[in-house]
Image (cartoon, rainbow, N blue to C red; front, side, top):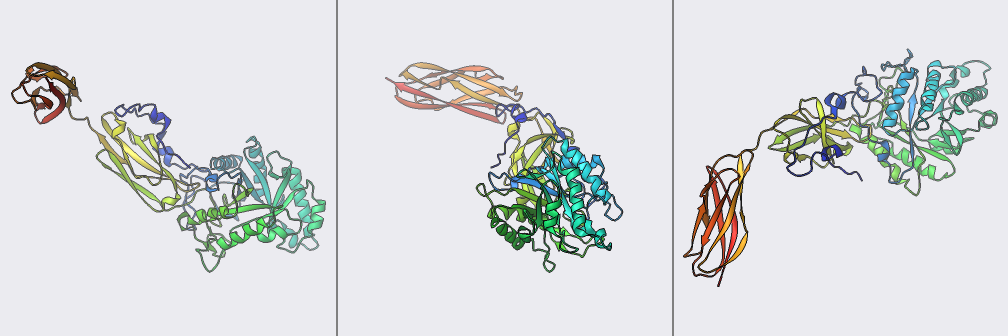
Length: 530
């Protein structure tokens, strides 16, 4: 359960209802709306559903999983951008500084590693990216891991060369991976063995997997794809993927995932990698075939996570998740730039109450954050609030007199875009001068035919400096009352003398002070005895 409360910084300044809150900006509007991802700043939104570089939620992706989950979350990673045969996304994949940004971004979202789509040592860009990724992962002291996914496309050159042995080519590539990557302390392992995942390795013909297993160094675990991967030759498990229904773009793959998870549970000794994805759209890929799975404003992303707890729990743990994908911009599955949840938020003031409304699904939101600014740029948080909250009374903060700007930030659930409202003006004017009346003692007993006194005190509020005329009602019949003095100034007192007659009983005296249009009263009790 997530708890929403006023931040500790703010609590330090609000010690009581009337304590004045000091505004101390801790962030800026620019920082809260700028690109906070590893996406290139120059990357703009695309027609296939990829959003442009922007501000996305860094809420931990594990929050989507079931309670007490120990699942590791990884992301499938493309290392080929910068080559002329791939889309220009504004960066070169093998650039170590870009890899550093991507690892930092992934860690900030609770992602523990990248599974690199690798084409062997003969495809230089992905291979160089693998070395950059290895170096960066090793610098993270165990916090971030990497592995290679052997893509069947790596065998394309061999398949088109007469006399080339596909099985031996696979052995050569896997031994290269062992020598150069799998010995790294940052390489992914399961049960103490390095893992190698495969994407369609038999596309050019069925390989001799017994020979491959016998001749590959390092004793790696082989992880194949789809539910059939659990029975593939030499398998140690399988991973699920995004499967497109070419006749229904709103089919988010529920039946496929159900089949994969139920099959995985029937092979408990093997390793299963769940799949989560935002959608799919290859209409911009040079090789695309116009396959589309709609994102539906983030519902596909949420739905794929909702399948996992149907099969896994704290007592039936899922070991691994592979997000599809970190940065496949060409297939429209990339998470790097975030996910569009089609949300907008707007606010308005009603007196001292800030109200806000949201368009789009609040089910894609983690919380709202309300900011106040003395200059429109420097921001101080007034707290995080649950998606069901839509108002905040600012009166209790007792800000100094002045003009302020407020913003409401709709913070998405993991990897969803964050949205900031437009500026909302808040004019905090000085409260009107006023006063209060008090009288002591509040109650007393007096005998008949005697005189008693009360002290009446006027307390000035908000700079009140007027004079207050005093009067009293409720004096017993036959009695009398006088004030000395009858008119008092700011923070002055008067003595009320009350003489009672022969009657007996309990009387309530109402003392009233009047100053122009202001009038306040206080009561005392007079109990007349024998």
